Length: 296
Image 1 (cartoon, rainbow, N blue to C red):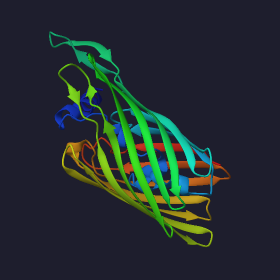
Image 2 (image 1 turned 60 degrees about the vertical axis):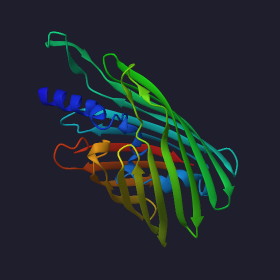
Image 3 (image 1 turned 180 degrees about the vertical axis):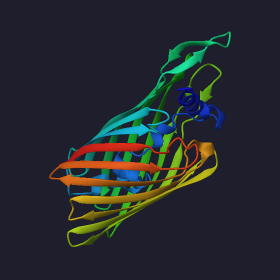
Image 4 (image 1 turned 90 degrees about the horizontal axis):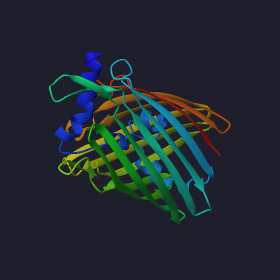
């Protein structure tokens, strides 16, 4: 119990010690499929409108952070629907649920417990400017309450452009462009702004397919690089085997990890599982994620 409280508190307060950055959970991939690919999703997220194989999708994901140590959970949900050949709307959100932590009173003794929470909601617009050119924009509202008297909100946007060249999709995006999180008059933290260049391509072998995804990014606040790479092999378009690696930076509250996962596709139904492999005291060690969704 004591270890869990200490680790949870350290994770929550790491934003203050890491260059005044908050809410790293907004940079986690949207579902277990992308999590298992190391989080590589820049090209996919920006180019959905160019895919004529489906009209819409809906996904829900339950992620357990270090279930044996922290017991914190993240719930993610998102939906996507094409209004016309060239236009689509996306919407969703995520809720970061922490376990209660003990709060010290002014005398240094344990006082009442406090349950931190964070959430993000977004509304997105996708537009096919040409047969092989897509533009995407998301508007976000982010809220964070990490300690008594430390609660704030921020507004942000994601912008992206994707271009398809004979099945190779290349995209550039800027995420979390927005205001600071004002926890108090004196504590105002930055959002984890990230600029990403991504590429993705699917190779088909009869009824089987191999999907490769790669992202390279830069986080201006910390002047550090991030990279994400993943591969998925689909067997008969029914079973999927996935693996990836995410190269991050501890100073940006985005640690490195490897990931593996599996998926199953039954008609419109999509099921997925991802497992994070990280060493030491990484906040992602032994993290699990489950997804259920539909594509229609």
